Length: 151
Image (tube, rainbow, N blue to C red; front, side, top):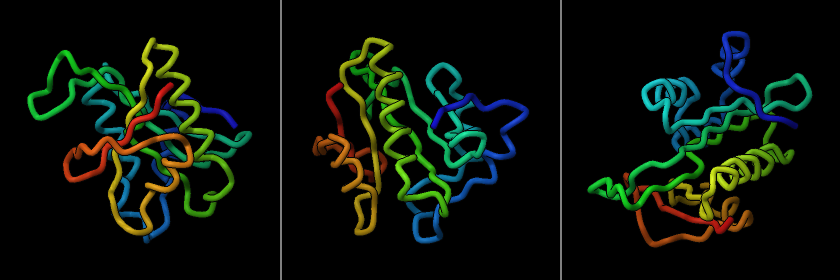
């Protein structure tokens, strides 16, 4: 497995990725993530997840985002912004690999915490993130639960 930058040669493969229909309310499509990466180039870190030469998912981290309703410049956070594993590729370890790779990238930039937000509903990703060491903070962001992991 490996992560690769989004390029003119692979962006169409990234756009073709989609999660299961029952998960579409949990994560934005890759096209929205790439648009956000374009708008926030100093903060977004989008990557395509490969198994060999086969694209199996998409992950995007965020770096040094001012947090909270007042966007407090003294509370800069980094974490997992998006994770889309192709519907027929789920359950094979790609999501775990991607989260660990994002955490390693965040750690390499000198941070000691990684954040994630997610929809708090049955069938949502809360158990997945808990297994990877994320714990809920009690905060919410745009109606989503916020969780943090020590790096």
